[in-house]
Length: 172
Image (cartoon, rainbow, N blue to C red):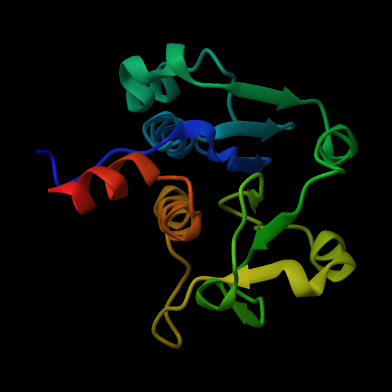
């Protein structure tokens, strides 16, 4: 029996990157999204072209299995997710990701590596801005690392994400 388990991708969790600048980071996030069963939304402008070889190299052969949506601008993205709950990850946020109850269909939104999420977006929904706890005074985590921490924290809370494995583990 495999005690490590696998994920049920029907959780509908989505990762979004607003204006990512570094192709390998986005490639690593794409790979994470495929492995975790998440959709990925990218919002232009991007700091690279989607055919960038470093993007494809970091995403490896996962890219062809990625459920990707690219939006031309913030307005198009926010219109597309208007009926879903979004969480905005920023190192200056007051609420911790550990204090949130995530739900199926949530959208985890991250800003660019150089500028984060625009203050106007964070100000519009301060109760949905989250930070990843870290030692005081340290710089921000890498974008791909932050996405991984947030994604798996959210997935762990979703009751159906690993239902098949829980049922199998209880029987053994």
